[in-house]
Length: 323
Image: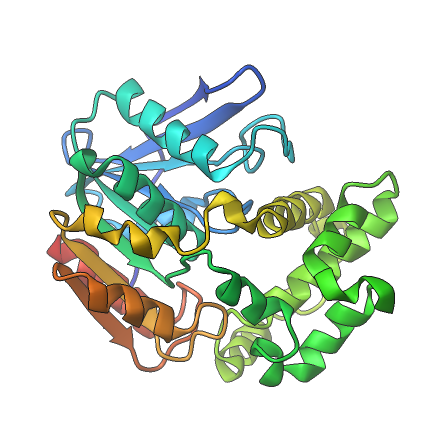
């Protein structure tokens, strides 16, 4: 079973002014003359991580990471104005032009898969290969899966109840909106607690539970982080941007990505999906795969949503080596 590639440092870090408000951070690592690959992080709002570089052979790829608007090292942090999916698509295209890249591999997982598909549908001529994992197509049904009591909560009612009950009953019909109000208010302590509650719920869906517990025991500090170890500003930013996109239907018309999937007909598409993904259930990836005649679907039999589970890592490395 393959593991991630060894840690590497970026050979170039820059910022790019993409609007009057926003400046995005981006970096390059690996082989300057290699196959360009842009890695689109999840969330929305999480920012990229140095570990993302390790999904790609540094001798083969010119690895490009960037922090989407408002998150990571992009500024201003947490800014919601001019922070929409069409804005992010154009940022990717501005970055491609800035780096003088003709075609590139577009890679993303979870929300990153959504953004990758949306970009590829608008600019298919610049996409060499589309590589996506944990597919999310931004439909209302998918959003409801994590927000309504008859979705993922059916499997994790003990995790869902604290998330729901943090909000007064008269606001529980729209939890993302209720959380967003608290995250964008003037009460920092309330925003902090809202972020913790929200991300604790979503975090419970990321990995198969037995594995998550095992890893937590191996890293005991992860169970009880101290006040000093926790970056609450990051948690608030992540939760705020995520709820901002959810409340606004991810700034994507209902069913738009599937409707426009024919625009991907000339692009090789590789899809990796955990069979037990409780965040983005397999049926979404299955539906996309079945309407594309140029896609390869790899179902990881012993994995959930997270990209760090061993079987998923093996599938990622095999796929990026194959491209």
